[in-house]
Image (cartoon, rainbow, N blue to C red; front, side, top):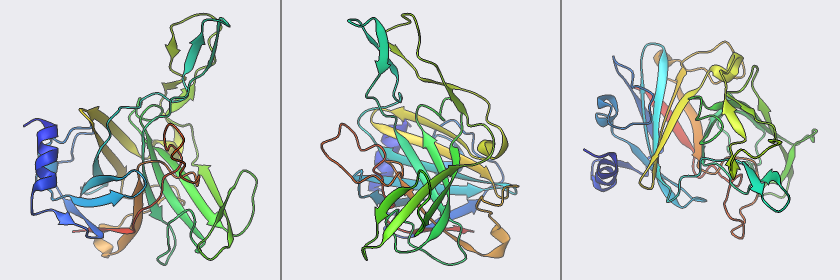
Length: 288
């Protein structure tokens, strides 16, 4: 069955978990293949959770399974255009040189609460918190088959390069986004000094190292929909990562967003909403 037809059937199927806040992760013997496909039998046997991204205005279908050592997710949502370039080099014929293009890549983010209590994971929260951020990027990280692994901190203390936000109670908040240790799954290509085509990708894939290699991910865009698979070991060596223990019975607070999480205010006059994402609703992951 074509994946688009299957996606539409899922949206209409009455057995879906609509509006629920808990995403069940079901134990399986065979792990899904990370190729951005929903044809894998593992996924067809799992009921999705349907939520709505308020900023993007789209429904997101989430599924999760786990094995003895890893947890897996499948995210699906509609997107009329595939944006798989990010600030590429664009040839200026008049100036005979390259400049930065306006393109911004599609993204998808998982944001995990690292606190011992429930918090509001919004970038504008009155709560102070640390969060483990898995940041899939259609251009930069997808080429190598990974997601960026980052630490997000929201506090009332100003720090260099922090983004200032205002909470609902009018408090100044400061948002930091810190990269995990190691090399990311991409590197920047210097601006070409000679003509290599009208558009040159600014980034190329590389093998990530350290904690940057923890989160594997692969996304495929087809006929107006993104299909993104994400995987990570249940436990890692990084103390700033979320650690999963299915046998503990613990529930894990998280949120997702289509338009990344930089803390920028939505501006409909812009050509895209890159960097203007929001955690639309709190979700919990429950291992079953």
